[in-house]
Image 1 (cartoon, one colour):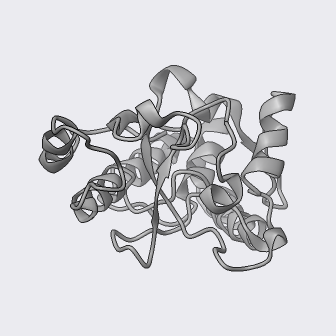
Image 2: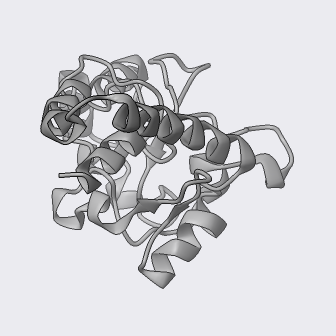
Image 3: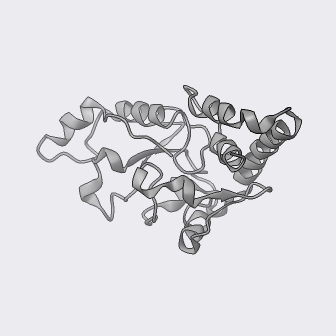
Length: 202
């Protein structure tokens, strides 16, 4: 779950100008910094690492500019995404790069969408949803079960499972572990997987 903060002042100012659009917004570095900060360094979709640099992330429009031009400067519609295999074959693409202009049912930054309640993870690192339509989007639209992403999530699951099995009175320490992870200034890549696992143990 992403908690949106205040938008950059430069975006507020730009939107108030005549003929403003996303393409002529010159201060996208402000936007990258704000998005990566509120997402604590993780991609909005795969939860891999992103950095606030044009070469290390993309500014994602949850509702695409092509289909929803009125949303192109709305901060609630903007997210920070990884490069998603940009320039590679379509079978190696994921996140915003694979999504392109297609729609998603749920926005990870909209609290009303409660994204975390719609996801689960299997032991092999597969991400899925009991919502059949959304499950199709996780795979077909976002490519979130690309092999590298699955293996990265599996490594996190294996690590937290090892903690669970090897820690005396682990159940009494679960909430402490969750708090430690979600209150970090910067999240570890794929850490929402560990938080999901721990919450199953509460």
